[in-house]
Length: 186
Image (cartoon, rainbow, N blue to C red; front, top):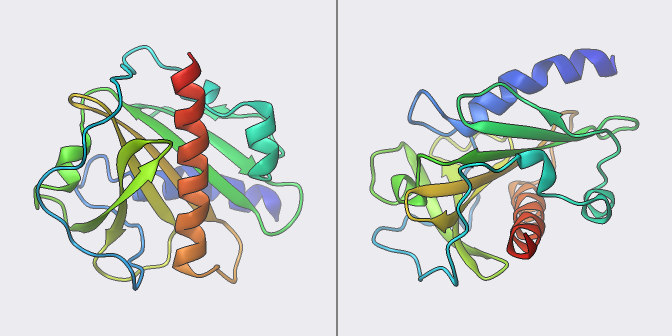
């Protein structure tokens, strides 16, 4: 049964990252609000051109996120890595995508069918991305790391019942914050 859920992860990862469709399949929470314009300035630029996303969460951070499996590099055009809790239910997944050719501004300019709520990830401006249809497929945080570059961190629970959207977004934000703490030390 666990293997069947793990086979669904690549599909879920593509749905959450919205790489090809220009849309995000992340949920809309009651506290999500549309925003336009600019985010606050980032404290510094962290270029991610050569980033291995499997290195952004250290062992201690992975334990705090309940990750119990080795990180797994994916095959998207953007570099990505999955972190899983797969030994006991509920099964969880975090997907980290280094978007070296896409900044956070694509979520703020109205071209995507999604809402973006400003959040903060370890002092870096970010957006919590939610799709307008209220689907409950996880939550994505997109962090402004450098001009024209972003780091996306998604959370999803693979087993039902799904936790509330606010809890899913809190998990995604916790992982994004950990990732930014790690990147600032590199």
